[in-house]
Structures are given as C-alpha cells and as structure tokens.
Length: 558
Image 1 (cartoon, helix red, strand yellow):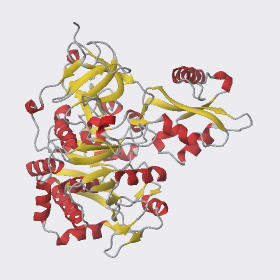
Image 2 (cartoon, helix red, strand yellow):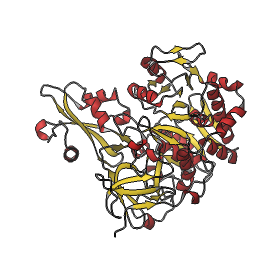
Image 3 (cartoon, one colour):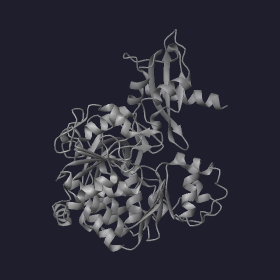
Image 4 (cartoon, helix red, strand yellow):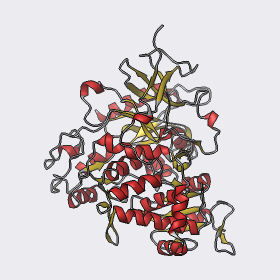
C-alpha cells in the first residue's frame, strides 16, 4: 500500500530554545535576561525615545495596572489600534500581564472596517493612536457613535459598541477619549502585587490575542489564539533567523498582523536585540533610520524593496551595518552592504496557525531545502487531502494542505470550532501542495481565489462588493495575476452598462473611499460583455478572466 501524505514534526517536548509559553512570561524572561540592553528606539514627532528591556517591562506593567483599574480581568478584550511605536508593545504585553486578550486592529482601516473590527472584537477598552497619516481615528469613532455617553462611574456607554467602557489615546485627549498620561495615572493606586497575581493565573492554553485577517473573506475574520501560539513563535524566530544579540531590526509593517508581530518582535527581542520602529512606511525616512540606528536586520514586503531603491537618498546612505538581509534583495545589493546571510524563505504558514507551521531556518543547505517550503515544526501534523472528499491522498500527490498543532487557533470569532476544522481537528487551509518522501512541504498556491499582494491577503469578494455599487457598473470581478514585486497584482475587470461613462481613475477613486489602500485595485480593465464568458450568476469564469487580463496587460506593455 502506498504511503499516505501525513507528515509530522518532532514532538514539541524535544524543541530547544523555548521558555515560558505565555506572553507575559516571555516578556518577563526576555527583559530580565537582557535588562540593561536597548529594546527599542522610536524617532517620533516629539523626539527620539529609547527604552531598555527594563523600561519595556516597566511600561508594560504600568499599562497593566491601569487596565486593572479600568476593570480588565481574565479574558477581557482590549483593542490596540496603533502603528509600530513603543506604546503598541507596552499595550499588548500590558494586556497580557493583566490577564486580558489583546485585539490588534489595523491602522489601514476605513471607517466601515473600523466599525466592524470594534464590534467584532467586543473590546471593553480601546487604546489607540488618533492620528495616522491623514486619518483621525478619534473623529472616525465619534462619527460612528455620536451618541456615546458616560455612566455615573465615569465609564462609557454605547449601544453601537455595547462592551466599550474606556478609550485612551497616545497622542492626546479628544471628547470621550482620555489622554495617555491620564490613562496611565489610573494605575497609580493599583498595587503591583495585584498585577503579578493576575499574570500568575494566565496559562498557555488561555486565550491570549485576537488578530484579524487582512481580508481573506468579505470582512476580516477575528482569529483567537491561545498564549502558547504567539509565544512559541516569538521564541522560535530567534532560531529561524539565527539572530544574535546584535540584531537591530527596522520594521514599519504593522505589528497588528501576525507575521510582522512574530518576525520582528521575536527575531529582535528574544535574543536581546532592539527594534527600530517606524510608524508608517516612508522609504527615504526608513533608509535614514537604518543608517542612523545602525540597523543589522530589516523587514519589508517585496513591493517595498523597489520603493527603498527608488528613494532619493538611496545612493547617499551608509547601510554597512546591515547583515540579516537577503543578498538578492535591493538592501542586500546596496553598494555599502556585504552579507552572505540566508533568509529563511523556505516556509509556509497562516494567521490561523499564528504564522509559520513549516520552515527551514537560516543556514539550511540548499540541497536540503530543494525548492520546498520547509519541514513541519515541532508538534505540527500535516496531511494533504482531496479538496472534495477530504480523503488523505498518497504521498507525493497534490491536494489541499491541512494542519494542526500547538499554534493552531482556538477559533474564529462567532464561528463554532467544528465549522473551522475537520473531524480530526485539522485546519483545512484552502491552499494546494504536496509532500515529498523527505518530509518537505511544497506549497503551490491557493485553491481559492484569495489574492496575496504586497504581503497581505485581499478578498476579491470584498472589493467587488464595493465596486458593484458604483453607478454604471454592470458586472465586476477582481482577480490577482502574477507580479514580480507584489506577488500578485490586484486587477478589477468591469463590464459597464451601455450608457455609462467610466474610467480607471474614477473607479479606483470610488474604491479608495471605502477600502484600505492595499485593497484598492492597482489596475481597472474594461470589457464588453461579448468579450467574456459569464456564468449563470453573471460572474466571470476566473481562470479564463486571468488569462484574458494577462494578455491585455502584455499588449499594453508591448
């Protein structure tokens, strides 16, 4: 009988380099081990902020005391709506120390998306950064809930957000939003021993964080993970990157997405290194930060590499401190950089498994990698199943990737767990792939139509649900087609009504009013209905449409 495609990693009990498997425990161990070393640096509007590991521990506990004063208890959800800044870390880990569940919310959110996130997260406290680029989240929240009131004990009362009791902002008070300093002052009367006692009750199996997908459904899904999931990955990324205490990691990609949270925070801080924080990605500023702070490590998505290379100061900066960068990327090719570091790109994961579930760490021989996407991590079990029947296919055959293990989510918000996993507890990813006889996973892409662009998952359903409301649009369907830097290019294809006058800029502008920037289609193409073969529900056949888009773009480029 042929072997089946069921492949397991080593037992979790045999994994080295792990410590306490709660977020508060990880922070305590890491900050105590590297107490005097720098943990982060932030060049903000009010000057440069530097926190040592000691400072990070103290600031997280200050937030925890204030949360306890606000009534946060075991399992209470606390929203964190911030860019990469010191308070993001003190907030998330402060929530953990207080026994709560940190719900990280994307600063890319439009008003409609923020409304969905705050309602779905059911957060009792929302810690936010009001001003992010041109957005004022304070004003957005006020518009969403103009009738918000205050109870006799000072807590907020909202029928739209019925669990929300407190709001605090790092960049100043506004209306019902408390200033960050006043929020921290709430904790002055709380004994640290109470926070210590609360932290001691937190177990690895308790709910720890609520992260949202970046858009792999019509609306972002809330994904609840136990403390063990993200904490395992924070410990592991030091090993994945082969990071040493000299790691000084620049990052501008939001920590509210699980991959950036694990890679940057775990990769830098677990080994005693430091984070170089940038609120939003600004290429010239990023290069100046790397130079000034002598970054050794940098995290960016493929489309950002080209923007860094095109920045006006590219030819002037000294980036010779960089080591943990891929020699094939622009930073690795910069004339001042010399590195032979191997980026651990042979990897596979999902937000549902709190990122990586199979990987080959940096330093793995290429003959061992053999073009694969890694081997299962300790504790993980994979199977490849027939997408229709769910039956396990023979080893080497292609099918749908299914996985379970110690970092698998506790579940989606509002969805029973048995609707998310199969009868054996495996999460069916919707991705296609196969295992070879050496136990290496080969990922081959999505079995569904989700678009992966610039490091984010984008739902064509969500985009089309917006664009179909644009006057003059008869049929709309969005697809992703291969792109050398973005991974996939988001292209919306439209059949207009006969009397409509539509243009590409107008459609993109309409979409931009309701969608986060990374979801706005990069291209809009127009077709006559006779050009396309439609299904009975007026949908365009995706495979045929992708081929047509590629052909149209090739003609344009010729």
